[in-house]
Length: 147
Image (tube, rainbow, N blue to C red; front, side):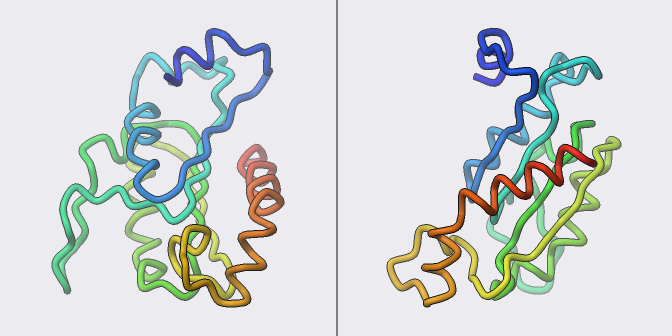
């Protein structure tokens, strides 16, 4: 799919955006060595509350990510909810994603839990952040472009 987009778009730059488990095919696509030319239109990926574990993590143990994690050289920005336990795993995730040289940055989304944009029981802060999700994505793609 990524190759098709790159081959058919007239856009000068392409940024991939994925949330939750949708980050898995994005990470797999970024690992494709055929997509890692410096002159490529593909400029990086924004991952929102990514869940790229290979298996359910056991409490107290290191997470095990899908095999393609860390095989990219593209810039990656990871956003995680401030009110989710996964925030504490961001340094480990960033290090795993950067193994092959990807510049990786992380940021917390204030006042929200993971999957905040999909919850039926949203808090007032989550409702507001969902309403502003397009601006959040836009702002972080600009930051991603500067990495």
